[in-house]
Image (cartoon, rainbow, N blue to C red; front, side, top):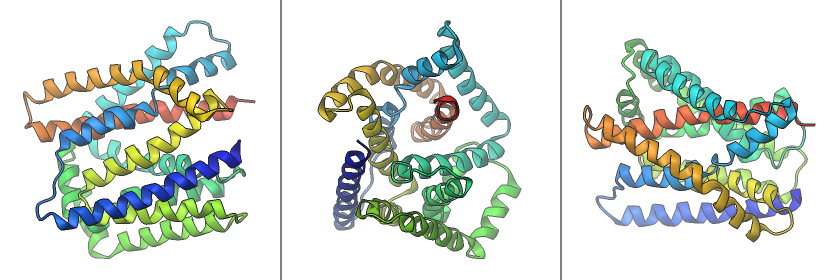
Length: 311
């Protein structure tokens, strides 16, 4: 089954790489190419969020391991963690952003690559973190001012934070960070070489292409929805039906739909409330990034607890 997943992910990475190139060429031909933040939000709320919409099933697995019968505790804990993240973001936004970016870097690198790496070690986790950090550093390197403007819209008002970013950009530290991320991809590729590991380089160049040609928001949306989320969803489909991927897809859609719709409803309620204080696009950006942070923390914690306790 692992060989089949590797093959499917290699094909998916190649198709995504072609898509990024074709989409970039089309964008170059259009003088004023823009995509509304609302379109990005809709993509994230459907394709993006759905890859975490089976967390309730994973929660049941975890509760079985811990022998806890009251499953209401899971939903309560998940919602509480999400609310705590939002509250902390409001109180200490710059610290919350930095922690989120660090955790997200490791999460992206690990989830996008771990199907290729069987061995579990701290060294591999470091490589996962460095590989995933490309998602953070590429938009900052290619569109520094636009990325800083995005941070400001996420309630980050810490002057020291922006002085530090300016120092990083002025001294070309971002370039060194990208080089480190590049080296991590090479090292992951070189370990136990096999042809299917070209997935790593297809992903690497795709991320650079979309961040070079598109705004940070659009580049992130393309990556998050069509690479990260699709890849994670493929692994979930295999878990649901190890023998037939098409049937796994049907089961996945059926099981993911309720929580995906529920998440979308909460997001639109929040959007309505925020729109009373901020302009529409500003409100959408807060929903996308602060909302994703609030869902990412419990999602990653759940993945970690299952991985540590599953026999």
